[in-house]
Image (cartoon, helix red, strand yellow):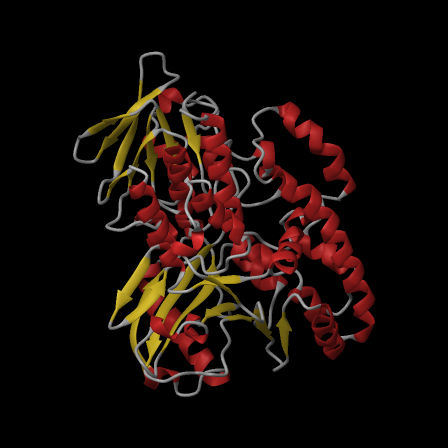
Length: 489
């Protein structure tokens, strides 16, 4: 079967590799000049910056793409464990080394509140139960209401109606520790105070399989999947933006895609790795959309956006670990600004990524490569990012310089930044959302846009906006679902 895959993020690449392995004739059509989507790589002045994602928590989902194609993953990629998973910094100067070691975690908890040790162990046991149920559904499609009703008793039993923060707070009383064990939804675009407690499975997933890094950066995984796809006979068209998904006279089947330059690429099935809302609104004419009308799509809840500054320094900051979570003074209030009030605050919380802590090849000798990421409201806020970005950049650099990275402004030798306009204009993401449809209960599983379109019979969706959701495990699993729905040639 001839299949066209729109977009080459991890969802599109994984779907393309799986389908080519299954015997289909697959073409990837990518808007940008290189593969990767959100995992695009920026190279400048001898530095290599992963656009993101940078946290790998389910390495076997990557490795099985190679092994199922009859290849040895080790011939393509090298994954190494990261310890600690994160170092979490607080405004009062305290810090928490977060990893999978039980005794280490208990010692860290004791630094804040010894009485929370037992609560943490109970919480960990509960997340194990959630993991068994939730992760067991991660590569199962939810195409019918019946499929949702089957799991409803488990969701009720596990209190899926409870937010991650509330669930953590049942077991842990110290406010700083509550933040330590509830920030994870932000990694997939969710507000810990709104995201269903099912997402606490991320904590168990990390404990069970660890946090990993691909030597050479996440971009090396993108390159390896592109190489594998080509070896399998797949075709890649770069700098080829799709303007429309072409539909036949029945109004129910796609016959291919039309590119911006007018070329039509015929296909018997189409897999879309583009943002779901943007794809429905812009690639599929309104006359073919009965459920996902513009009004319905605009009424849905979308994740926050991001401001990300990629920068290289002419010195090394050895005290900074691979992954740092820097929590500001406000937690709930800041998240309300971002998700509810859609207000760009003067304060922020940050994720600081220093891959050269693990792999020095990503920067020149004696130098460090970083990116610092700040969650910000999506473009529904009305913020003028062309005006706001310079001052926001300077505030973040000044904050890091004052508290964590002495003389930073003097040592930055190269930099590049992206903001919500990049997500909207370059990545074609509705409202400049960084993670597409928000992971709240009423937008999860069957309630989420389906992996097989409800409008067009042979149109499939992979990526952050469809089931099971954002994050590398979710995106890779969406590709597994879509490939399974299409079937072998």
